[in-house]
Amino acid sequence: MDWLIDNIVTLTIFVPMILGLIVFLIPDDEVWVIRRVTFVFSLVPLALALTMWFVWSDSFRIDPTFQFEQQATWFPAIGASYHVGVDGISLPLILLSAVLTPLAILASFGVNEKVKMFMTLILLMEGAMVGLFASLDLMIFFIFWEFGLVPIYFLVRIWGGADRQYASFKFFIYTMAGSLGLLLSIQIIGLSTGTFDIPELYNIWVNMDPVEFAQRTGLSLNVVKTLAYWAFFIAFAIKVPIWPFHTWLPDAHTQAPTAGSMLLAGVLLKLGAYGFIRLVIPLFPEMATNTAGLLATLGMLSIVFGGFAAFGQWDFKRLVAYSSINHMGFVVLGIAVMAYYFGQANIDAAGTQDALLATNGAVLQMINHGLSAAGMFFLVGVIYERAHTRDLKRFGGIWSILPVYGGILIFTSMASLGLPGLNGFVGEFMITRGAWGPFYIQVALSMIGLLMTGAYILKGIGEVLHGATKAEWVGHLEPMTFTEHCVIWPLMIMMLVLGIWPQAILAIINDTVSLLF
Image (cartoon, rainbow, N blue to C red; front, side, top):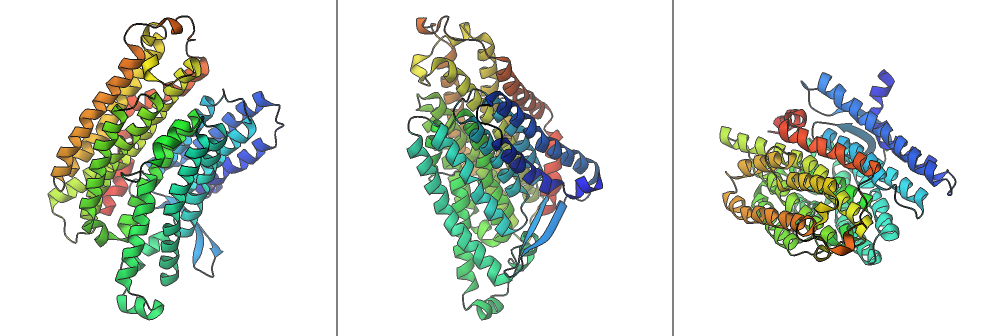
């Protein structure tokens, strides 16, 4: 047991990758075996993540710093090491990844083309996602950041819709454009300080002496920090995505297969927000504070424009895709509050409360959005499999044919909307309450976007479920299968539990966030 705990983070990262390679050795024609073996394999990292969660809850609440750490020499010539570990911010996101992966695999049981490669890519992507959340070295962080692009690129490129080539190319170019500046900045930070270790850089890089830096590199520390900060900012802004860096997202979501959309919205969008919390704000506290107003404004614009754009869509999947921009705007608004207070030397009691509320809310909302967005994309996939269209104008009266599906769609839509009692409400309430003090103008304007959230959710429900039942659907839409119920019901249960008892996950998040302030 001690060996398991000592190596549990590394196992959670690399076990799904190794198991994915084992799946790749199964003969191509054994489709039934490939699907079920992949699903069983995906439960192993879930068991490891749950073990970490329960051990943390039992042993590390009193010391919510980085735990389960492993560090080994990797690239001593430049000061990079294999250093992984988790805290109360990264652990819930790792658990989210481990929960959504088996559900995405179940949702993919209908895939019939190149099944082995499809399942292998999903397991590889899970390892990359967990690896990034657990990385405590900038070089390791960047490796997993880049590696995670490859599976989703091929999932869209090979199994996507009619415009999959355009969507996958656009996704790759956008994210690679941000990654180039990120890599350059990471190299500058590591080579100028002699280390890429993130916990060490929180002290060394932040408190770097300008004179010593100039003597070592011949460069101005202020100029280098400014360039590095904006490179980090843009790379993570593209990944969130924050308006106006968002245009790759609707295309990628619309063309991706259902499992790809579930993981893209459920986890991959969180990588950018996590980058702001883990790297941008702690490594550049003064600059983050000085630009917090800009970040809050961009978050507000994402909320408003994302809401209006979603309302204007008639492709059901594209509507849900734009809703992710709308919801992630609230996460960005919460992160802006963290940035505003993090770089201040003295924070009064009211400011501390705002910072804790908004930062906790931002992390919690990442989890909540991951669950509801994955559920919504899955339900779009369910109706598309039967109707072979996502055009809202062609639907109508589906509830009379698929009443169970209709009830599930309404429940999941209400969680996405932020109905009190379901998970979407708690995080958004904490963010807006915490942001009101420093950014009351942005919060007030973001309410326009919140209004549009209700509008596009009701539009989607109304066009699909209500109205006259069209003859073309009568007798042609089969009820949801047992496998489909196995995908959506765990998500619905988690949406309800976190809506009624958010403390189940918020307590772990708050322990670490409280240390930051």
